[in-house]
Length: 283
Image (cartoon, rainbow, N blue to C red):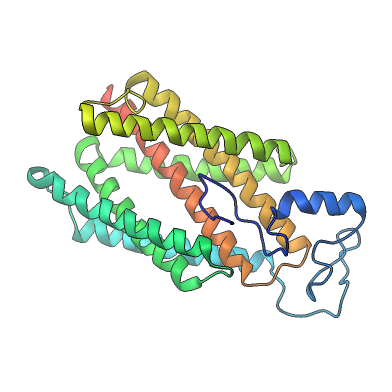
C-alpha cells in the first residue's frame, strides 16, 4: 500500500514493485540499470538520452510546478473565501471551529481515497486542496481574531522561508536523501504523531492543555520539531520529483508530486502558526 500522507509515508512514483522511487533509483544507478527501463519515456541517467523512442508524455519540472501552483492556488482561494465568508464569531466559537474541523475531515477522506488509488486523480487532489483551504481559512481567521493578523503573516512567511531554504540546500546537495534518512524521518514522524494524539486525548477528556505539548515551552519545542520534520518531508518530496523526471515517470505522476508538496506545506504552516501563537501569547 502506498500513501500520499506526509505523516505516515511518502508516495513513490509509479513502480511495478511499489517501492519508494528515490531509494530504488539509487540502487539501480549503482547496478547500471534504469527502474523505468520498460517505460517508453525513460532516459539514461548517465547520458540524459532517451532509452526508447522519445514521447511527449514524460513528466517534466514544468509539469510539477504548474500542477503544484494549481493545487496551492485552489487551496489559497478557498482559504481566502472561508476567511471572508465564514468569519469567526467570538460568541459562537464552537460553530466556527466545527466548520473548520468538518472541512478538515472531508479533506482527510479525499486524501485517503487518493492514497488507495493506483493512479493520480486530479479531481480528488483539487477537492482535497479546496476543503483543506476551508480548514486553513477558519483557523487562520481565528488566529487573526485572537492573536492578531501579524501571526498569520509570520506563519506564511515562515513556511515560504522553510521551503526556499530546503530547496536551496537540496540543490546544493547539503541534504542527501538516503534510505537511512527516510527511515529516521518516518520513525520520528510516527513518534511525533503518537505524542500529539496522546496530548489531544488528554486535552479532550482531562481538560486544559492535555500533556502540555502544544503550549508554553514544550509547545515551542514540539512546534520546532514539527517544522523540522516538515522540512525533512520536503527533501523527500524533492527527491521523488528529481528521480521521477530522471527516470521518465509519466506526466500524470506530477499530480502526485503536487499533492505531496501541498500536504507538506500545510503541515509546516500549521506548525508555524502554532509557534507564533505561543510567542504572541507570551507577549
